Image 1 (cartoon, rainbow, N blue to C red):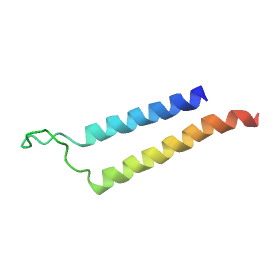
Image 2 (image 1 turned 180 degrees about the horizontal axis):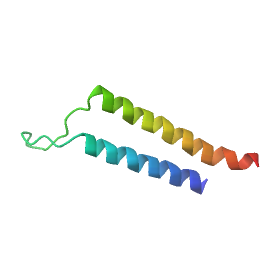
Image 3 (image 1 turned 45 degrees about the vertical axis):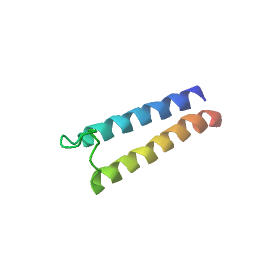
Image 4 (image 1 turned 135 degrees about the horizontal axis):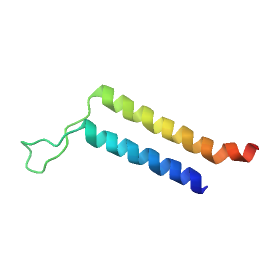
Length: 66
């Protein structure tokens, strides 16, 4: 269970880092809000989340098979 948590945390860290790199703060906005993601970047982040869930499930369930 610990390793699955670590795998999930690493995946979320990478997703958040990728989101922050894909969207720069708007310099004209007083509160420096980030612009909306374009559709391609949003699809890539969703795919990264699905892969994170798949890897986490594999880390959790596969060791029980052996």
